[in-house]
Amino acid sequence: MHYTFRKAEISEADSIWKLLQQAIIRRKNDGSNQWQDGYPNLTVVKNDIEKGYGFILVEGEKIIGYVAVMINNEPAYETIDGKWLTNDDFVVIHRVAIDENYLGKGLAKKIMNYVEDFALQNNIYSIKADTNFDNFAMMKIFKNLNYTLCGEVLLRGAPRKAYEKVLK
Image (cartoon, rainbow, N blue to C red):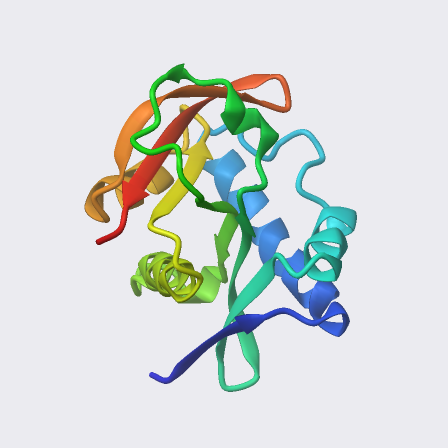
């Protein structure tokens, strides 16, 4: 399969939101509390895209994955119960989602690899992320991609597991 990873366009917001809605339902069906409080939503997606944070994984013309990618832009990460591996510039990832018809093909890992390339292209050697304590699928991805559990951060009032990967 041939995949393209690129910035999302505002005209794609509705398609991205549909993909995220699948992930929200999947989180609920997995017994997770993550994304069960009205976040993320279409406004968040549009904001991501308008600020240049929204990235999509595309097969042909079909959007099959989404991630928000920011540089040094997560105020919640300023305070951690634990310790980050680095204090330099970092890329932040949020809202990773894969189309339900493409699950089990390693596409979340592929998105994470594209994000690593994005970081390196920007001369940034750290990726930071967080996830809910009951998002076992994302924790497994972090483990498989050699992210280090650094502690806990508070995001939108809830404790989250905080991870970092230092790139070579």
